[in-house]
Length: 576
Image 1 (tube, rainbow, N blue to C red):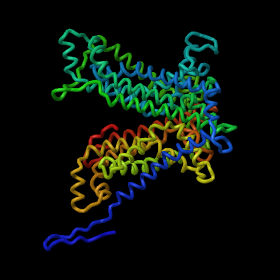
Image 2 (image 1 turned 135 degrees about the vertical axis):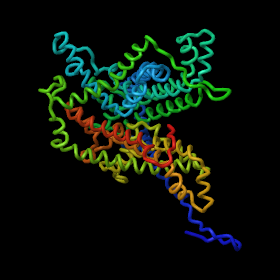
Image 3 (image 1 turned 135 degrees about the horizontal axis):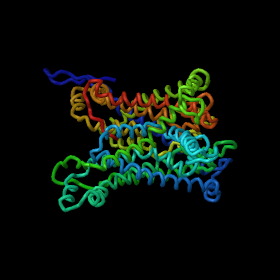
Image 4 (image 1 turned 30 degrees about the vertical axis):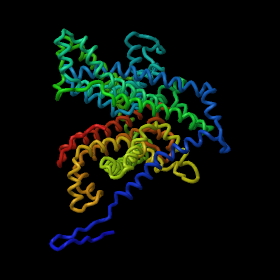
């Protein structure tokens, strides 16, 4: 719809076009509400009803009285708290070495820690299964060979609670590392220099000045590690189930095995949802209350500690941590992909391409899984980034009083664990009213919901870096909000948009927690195929698929990091 506004002679007329921002705002609100509210609504309904549809608290009563349901909660809490503590033990010294010392190769260390971010935790668990299984693990095989021991003796056993804690910590410590490193780089130099002037050495300054200032970052990072461990499905399913114990996520999954108990699964998912919300709220509160305030101007550069003779100890510790978290797992996957059995060494005689040939030319499920995975990755990244872009624009530019609520809806899925969302979507779309279970549509809905907060937060931060005057100039010349977004703001944020697309794409192709409940024989994905192959013990094929997944992920990360070279206005990315 258009209208021509006339004014006095000598003043040109201006054409006013219809502003689509309001109907788009309403449409996005409905879409996000359906993505978030519908599965949670069905989850609550099944939790408080019995098989006849009558209101009942029997499911919650069973959670309290049945030891087989109560014990997984206790084990999961114990495991997640241990992961939070171990992540701090690993990450804090490493962060201090990287941020505050003169150890050589610190940039490379940051890059290798990033590799832990990219590695799917379930793939890392499989890598440690290859390394530390009591009978066939490479470490135990070498141990028996060195000391000429019996075939049943072993040095380490990954199929234990402590082994599970270790395997998960290898891929959660980067959260603590990143927050603590950033905090260390922001510590006011004047405070540490004042401590040194007053006679405080390195250790007293660390204990009394530096550590208290970065303590909020340590606590926030450990809470993220705890949350990741508590809501994780893949690693516990791979390492805990063979050891005959459950955590809550694997127990929820088992309740969908024959005979299925959806009501009990829904009731078990709700406490996990509540704990997740509390942990996220606590983490935000901690990050919102900074441990220091700089008064009197800009703080100086970070105070670098000269290690001197301690340099080799720092290098040894760093190499040890990176070997356990990145180098050894990657080497185990590569070695297993190129030999017929896990135990035999990689030599010229044992080298084989059999697993590669099997995966790509003989295994019938591979082609379908690859097609489904990359199709869903492309669609989720494209649709999700487009929605996140418009939502971030409407919220950051304050297009209406209700705009903040749209932002809340976009970030709400971050509080929903993957396994809980999977249960809710299964209950929502397996009914005759919305029969989407068994199709790719239900997986697309799941991925859009899971990845929406990441895309929205990244683009929301990017919008804040572009001054609103550029858009106001377009509005003065007669452009609508959507037109200014399309022709002015979006081109300025091209690098940020592509980076968000890459981030969502990687998150989609590595997702397992929600996927495991929503796939069928016709909708298998690479992550689910890897999990299925692990149950059959085909570690060679798993390694090939895992390496392929890692190569694609690193290629996408490389592309995202090369974005400033694409030309156009360079807008510095801001972490959401």
